[in-house]
Image (cartoon, rainbow, N blue to C red; front, top):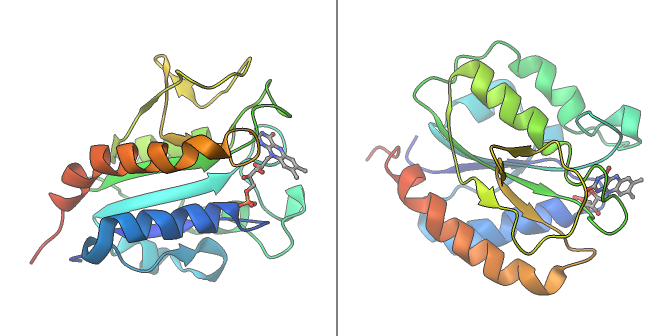
Length: 181
Ligand SMILES: Cc1cc2nc3c(=O)[nH]c(=O)nc-3n(C[C@H](O)[C@H](O)[C@H](O)COP(=O)(O)O)c2cc1C
């Protein structure tokens, strides 16, 4: 596939909006972002370069119907993807959350996308420093960094534009290296 696939889950639209902003920054290199509640495993797995995004709802889980995302989200989609061979794929992850209201589990759902990538043998790029965020705990921090970009439109929306631009500049070369033709 000669595009970067962007797949997101969302309830109130923030994670979709972030996906759209990323696609705009990537220009022709990116396919149109797709909501995972309208996607099949084949849709996603056709890409060798991917950006995957999730909001955080619930506790220690991916969002979905059990966290009151009525239209479905990663919780419903992920079973289709269990056991997928992701070797040869390069994947960049992002999460949205609210560090002021949920400082003890900030952007926690992101770690589940990361665990799935690692189990499938993908190369995960785009780890992101925790500098500039204020929270107590996030399971999505591994070896001192977030496993992907974390965006907080509730408490730090003024920083989103620069974070997005810097992160896309960071991951674009690695993702583009996977594109064919
Ligand atoms: C009921 C509820 C629970 C939430 N739980 C968390 C949480 O545990 N951790 C966190 O970082 N953010 C949490 N958030 C914040 C959302 O993840 C954040 O607003 C996100 O941007 C929403 O994305 P969406 O608009 O794509 O659904 C919660 C928000 C709501 C309304």
